[in-house]
Amino acid sequence: MINVMDAAAVIAEFAARPVDAVRAFPELTGEQLNAHPGGHPNSIAWLLWHSGRQVDSQLAELTGDKQLWFRGGFKERFGLGPAGDHDGIGHSEQQARAIVVEDWALLCDYLEATLQAVVEYWRSLSEAELAEIIDVSYTPHVSRGVRLVSLIDDCQQHVGTANHIAGALLGAPAGIF
Image (cartoon, rainbow, N blue to C red; front, side, top):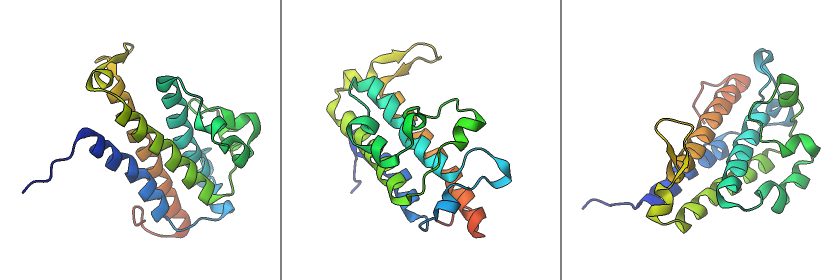
């Protein structure tokens, strides 16, 4: 017998993948989290922080709710000041390097909270709401459902990059975590 999953269950599984991947990394030190191999401005800390921030900020635009960053106490827990309030999209090298996070668990917790919020929001929507076109600046136009999928996909790509950097820093093959 074939187990058939509904769309919400598929999204929940998809949204769990970046979190599972990050939690599979060995716990990294502050020095490793904030290293800039090859002089690249995006550290592992920046990549994981940005993954959560871009999900959070774009989801808030869709829901009309305040971002978890502000309402969930993450702004205070991260202690990044105004620099942390931006989502990192379009960051200059200087802005990216200003994001310094020493707390591995906090990065994981924020990422998990934002992706769980995506799943909860998805489950609250009707088929018509998921199909609603919300962005006509792209061809094809972007529906609410497609935007939610792209948030998770973008997050997964950043986590994959962080995985590669972690492997390089630890002298391990990329993708072993």
